[in-house]
Image 1 (cartoon, rainbow, N blue to C red):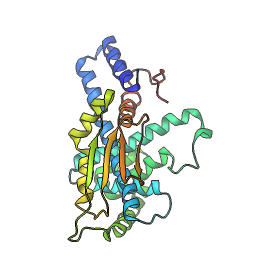
Image 2: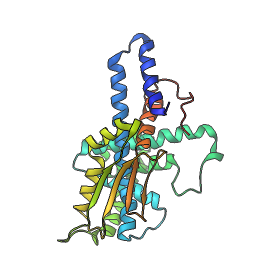
Image 3: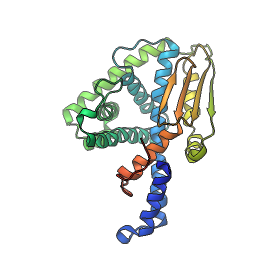
Image 4: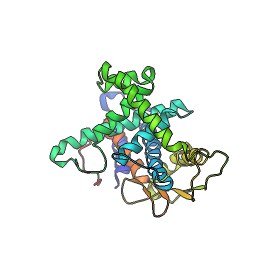
Length: 279
């Protein structure tokens, strides 16, 4: 049984047992609904993160420092300036919480297990960097989130400069590639067979995450050659940009992983320590 199916079973069992004597079908449905929303919010951030890699690769943009950190920043900026602020802001909060809970889980194996040399910053660093950009851009909306993350008031004030510097830097890099009367090469969006992850494929389509990102890119920047955005089964929880194929891939397994993170670690349904088959 895969971890997604195990999560569904765990929630159902928890409901059937009547935990605290106060749960039922409505509670089960609420957990599943919130878990799917969490997974899709994380997917939105992840897709924009990979769009950042794609823009660097397809437009030949220079990168100073870690590319992974740079595209985390771009994804955050993109969502902070999204027209649908309710959806985008929830996506940012859930994505940062995802990194935070991943970090909490990883500490159980000890610091020697951390990949300090990897291309990504540590999950906890990614979470706090995102929250800093968020409160720097909009302290009224994200001040409470920053307080939950225990960013002190002085640091929250400094985050305004951090956000402004990042916004100006990315805007300067991308301005040379704006349409300015030109047309962009197209982006084709493909949803491959999802198999047992069909629920996530349906949610991705309904939220229009890949399609929306594709439209925003081609309506803003002149891509020199066609690009593909693909949702697929990958055999692992992942998302990536393949420069040799000019293709961004979002894996259904990643949505399932984030769904389970919410069920087990945030909603605290079932036993997060059980053998679920996840690597």
